[in-house]
Length: 137
Image 1 (cartoon, rainbow, N blue to C red):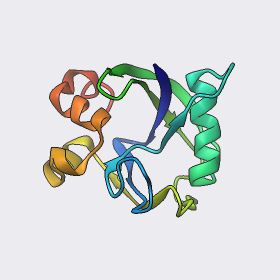
Image 2: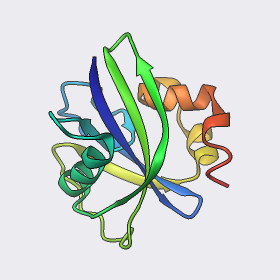
Image 3: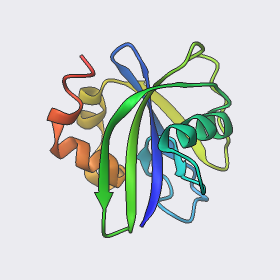
Image 4: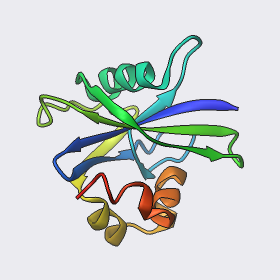
């Protein structure tokens, strides 16, 4: 099973959601969290920091692992890492990875997008609001 770290970048009660690039082989145009595969000898925290630098050109601080979701159909364990940054307005996207971002609350996001438009981790969080509701109010 591969391990991925997803960056749940928070600014107050808003979260940064990202639409994957149309050219991505896996899940093109799908809304998800910025994320990446853990490399050898790398923790989920280290992956979140590295991927934030690569995909968003920002430095993040990891607050905690919100949850780890096993997506057995994909052979992936997704570590949902809650992060903050001192410069939320300074995000520069790697266009080969992410085509668009939006700051929303989880409630706004789930009202706007259907399961067909979002990644597996967000489908899981929609079905399990108890995981995020206490942390994002």
